Every structure is written in structure tokens, then in C-alpha cells.
Image 1 (cartoon, one colour):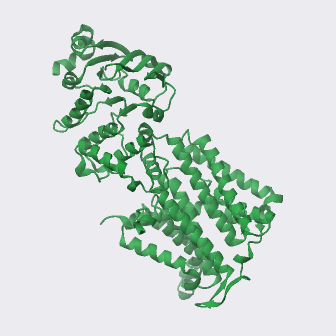
Image 2 (cartoon, one colour):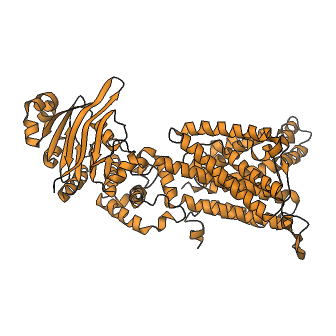
Image 3 (tube, one colour):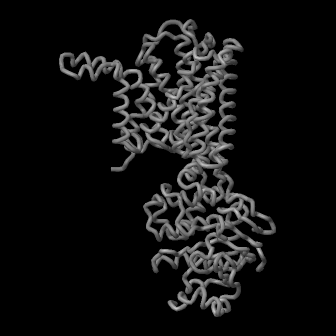
Length: 352
Length: 254
């Protein structure tokens, strides 16, 4: 049963199993274990980023394809939901139409870019994605009539997902049974299902072909796999799932804007999360995204505490000033790449 | 039983001003093992690349089973019945031995786009793959990554991939290169076995004269990219032109 759900990809390391179970439990019961707007928001972000990073890993770690357009696909899904909700009015039908059309457009765009550039060389694809992603980002900020430009769009989502909606009286373990809770679980379960689907894809016959292509595309072609078709298919699937992650993000935030869903910064964050977690492992996305989002949200606080604790000592409080959190995030990243070149998952799975 | 399966007509490729393969017209028959010989740089591997599609022809045609395949991709040719083993070992280094073979069987079964089932549950692919791994005497290493295998074992796996593909035209490019005296017979026996089936055409680029003597039904000689001789092994080897120009030294050794 468990083997089937995980598609036969057991953690193969006790430490990894413990960490994964802890993350799963943490996310599954976040509203109860960590009540509070900010912590639940962090948990939702982690769930969404796990999907986004895993979809990138599907392309990079399994397909060996480097893309810089992943935030663009993410943004397409987010804007899909935003535009549908703005123009169709609040409702689940708008969410569905927005998510599905965002995913379809993302897949279609990936198909076009892929057919155009994956025939040639992988590096060419990377360049094209960079160009297209920049063009789309500029378009979104210029077409302000449609997209709200730099200000982005705020819209209403169904009442059933809002704090005013109560689906049961009273409280469960001190948590109100409201739409906010429903919304969290919509995000959590959608992310979980999308992740498990990707886990299945990478362990399917198709996933094995991707591995073969990453290992030796020349030979993969010689045993009868049309490499371009597989690369394009992997890119399309990855783009569609990234768009669905974007749709979840848009539902969660009830806002989209270039900074939250299209910026190059997010693209770099995704790359870091994949590398920190471990490329080509899927579970690396879980660990990478969790660590990174936690650090993004709590490193500042942690440093504040640390800086206060060492007041009076020379230099240290300045170094630990909360404003310097990005510096320390960078240091953490360099250290993790230095000590775990195969990512955290690769390291934990190493036989010793 | 012996009928033409593969034909090249005036097959030519030029790299800049250099003509690497020069108007080679040749027919290969089912049930026949043709050895392709010639000095280094004669164009043997390039001729192979033109037939299996890694290089596009500048002129001429490749016809398989009556169908012009000159413009088809490598993968398309593979599906029509051209199979190739490579001179420099060319495998999937971080996948295990069984998975390397299984991928070939999966390709033949056309299941590459199956996305929602677990590959490990396709027993009808795994079982034949394991049989082939046993035939090349690698069952002990079946679950080892290829990168950990010895050179000789990698050569065996290279041949195993071709046997798993079971094409109409087998193309071996120096299959025993660098193998030890103990290991080479495993590969040569497999090739002999294929030959005795009489239902496949085998093309073999080979330098070792003893191998050619035992296996070849026919020899073609390439020199400077052109076809220099073609015929029965005894006749070709005895012909003065071949003796002196291309094989003098090698024949001395044997």
C-alpha cells in the first residue's frame, strides 16, 4: 500500500524517513500544531513550493533540462486564477477555469518553446526560456489594464474559503472551523496529490526514459527513444504542474503580482531549493523547500533573538543584525552546497 | 533464405572538403555475416554512422527492406530494424545493468510514454531483460550500476543491449575491442549464435583476422572512404591489392 502510494520510492535512510514524516505531520496538522496567521501562512507556502520545486526537479533532475522560465509557468497559473476570479466573479468555477486554463496555456507555451529549441541543444533551450520569461514579465507589468501592472490584482475567492464561513460550530483544539481552515486543507491536499503524481511519473516507464536521456541521450536515441519528444513531454508536464502550484498560490494569497509570482528572484529560489535538497530525488524538493521557506520567514526573527542575546559583545550584534539575514542565508547556501554536493537527500542516502 | 535486406547506393558524406565516405554501393543479405575491414581512418565507423543515422548523408541512399530510410532519425531507423553496438562503450552509466537492458525491451514494447504505472511492475519487460543479462553472463552484476563494471563486462552489456533490441540488421563495431582473451569468447559465441539463426543480417567491423576467418561469410574492404574489395573471405584476403595495400601487416601477425 505505502509502496504503491510512494511509487516504490522508499526513503532508504532512517534519517530521511524521520525528516519526511516530520514534515508531513507538520504540514498536515499545521493549523493545530502552530496556530497563528503567520505560521499557517508559512506552512501553506511550504506545501506550494514543494510542488513547484518538485516540478522543476522533474525537468532538471530527471530530464536534464535547464529552464529559467519556471516562475513564468508558476505565474501563468496564478494569473489564470486571478483573471478568472476577477472576470467571472467569485466562485469555485472561476478557480477551476483559472487553474485549468493556466495549466493548459503553460503546457502549450512549453510545447512551443520546446519544439522550437529542444531539437538543437539543451543550452539553447535555457537561453530561450530566459528570453521568453523576461518578455512575459515585461508584458505583465506593461499590460496594466488586464493584469494590474506592477500593483497586481486582488480578487475575491469563494466565501467557503474565507474566514467568515463557519462549517461547524465551536472550536477543535482551539482552532475555529472556518473557511480559512478549509482553504489551508485545499492547498495541502492538492499539493500532496500533485507531489504523489510526480513521484509516480518519475518512477514510471516514462520516468525511466527521462533518466536514460539524462544519462546518455545519444544512446537513448539509438535504442529507439525519440529524445526530443520525451524532453518536450517532460517540459510540458513540468510547466503544467508549476502552473497548478501557481494557481494554489493565487488561491491562498487572494492576490497576484509580478513580485509574488513572476520575479526572477523566485526562479533563483527554486534553483537553490532543488540544489540544497538534492537534484533528481523528488524528496529533495520537500526538504529544500521546507528549509528554504522556513529560513526566509524565520531567519530574521532568529537573528534578532541572537543579536539581543549578544548585546555588549563587540561586532557580533552587528553581524547578527536582522537586516543581514540575506547574508546569512547566502552563507547557509554555500555551506550546504559545500558539504552536501549531492544535496541533503543524496547525503542522507549515501551508504556508509 | 538469403535475401537482400539493407542496401546503400552511392552513399557519400563530406566534411568540408574531406570525403569520409565516397559513393559506397553495397547490398547486405539476411542470414549473412559481413565483415567490414580496412585501415584506421578508412571510413568504417563513418559508414556505420550513415547507416544507423548518427550522421546525415551528403548524397546517396540507405534502403532497408525496400524502404528509403536516408532521411529518418536514429530512433525511427531503430524501430524499423537497424540496431547498433558502439565501438566506444556507450551505456547509461548510473543505471544498473538490468535497467540498461530493460530500457531497450521497453522501447521495443513502445511503452516509453506510460506515465502512471510503476516501471517495476512491468514484469513482462523485466523478465526478458533478466534472461538477456544471464545470456551475457552478467546476472551476478545485474543490480550494479554500469559505471562500476569492468571494461570487459561493459563490452558484454553493450552487446546485450543490441541482442535485447534484436534488430533485422545487427551492426557491431569492434565488439571485442579491449576485452581479455577469457572474456572475448562470450561475445563471439553470441555473435556466432546469431549468425546460425540465419534470419538476421550481421555487419561486423573488426580488426582481428582470426575472428573474421571464423565468422565472416563475406568481407568488404574500405579504403579512403571507398569500397576497395567485396567478396568471399578467401578470395578477398588472397587478392593482391588487399594483401599489399590494406592488410599486409595484420596478416603477418596472424
